[in-house]
Amino acid sequence: MPDAKVQEMIAVLGAADRFIPGLLDSSAGIDLDSRTVLWENTFVDEASYSGPYMVHPYHIGAIDNYVMPDSPECITDNTYATRYTTPDATQVVRGGIRRVLLLNASTDADAAAIEALAAQPQEMAASIFGADDVGWVSAKGRAWTHIWEQAFTDMAQLKRHLGTQEGKACSSVEGFDSLGISLGSLKIFTCPFELSPVENQSPPAPPPDTSPVLYTITARTPVADADTYVELLERCYDAFMVEGGCPLLNRWRTVDQGYLEAEVHSTWQIDSLAAYCDLRATTIADPQWTAFVKDAMALVQGGSRRFHRAV
Image 1 (cartoon, rainbow, N blue to C red):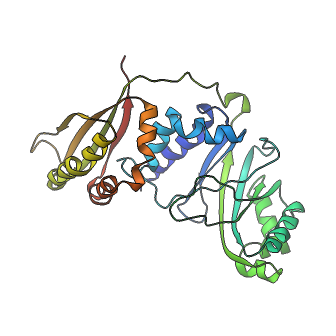
Image 2: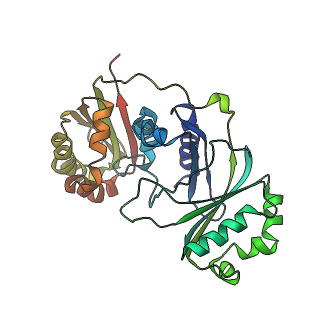
Image 3: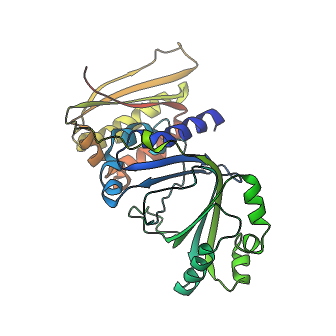
């Protein structure tokens, strides 16, 4: 995946706090040891997390472009979410290095021992420990029991921490075991972060928009695969959309022998963005949608996914 596309997604994720009410301190970055993108944000309360976040136009449009498997712009795989509760929504450390330990503690006693370590951190700007209480769990199930989030002012402080006895021990399952703490699994992500000024975040909620929208997917495929892609659209995706009350309005493709790639442009009518949210919730369990993702998206080499309203 080109770095420019990954950076584009990171910018979109990081800007979420400028659009979604109740969401603060959104930041995203690439793990220093892998290609994993770590996205973190703070919700002011439970209602903000379970309410406007998933149904906001910015999530449906910009964010879902990169994570919905039926989007030609999707560049993610094997995504999962974790969450923990804090006393308030304030993040004191506004920039530096974030280190997130995802832990599968074997017993409550093991979790309590880690919590004690987190309460007395060595060479950290911030240390927060909590149980994973995320409401949305993928089909893979809940992988982690707890999260230990650490913040450092810069790489120098992180290196000093990793040189301490605690830092060395709390960097592997074996290291935790040497402290008498049993973990079923451990995953560590480290990435730079910078939070925007709070006054630029969490705008007022927009009024509900019940107007119809046009949902358009433009997909680029090899010329030799265009007919197969269109057939899968007609057989699987159109059927899924029609069952959800979203008829196809038009479909066009580039002229033969005119381009190095083929481009297929499809537009469906949806009653509203809220109606799309209801449809999105059915995707993973729908056999026609899953068949399309499995067979058709392997042919797609790029494109776009957009929602339009009348002007």
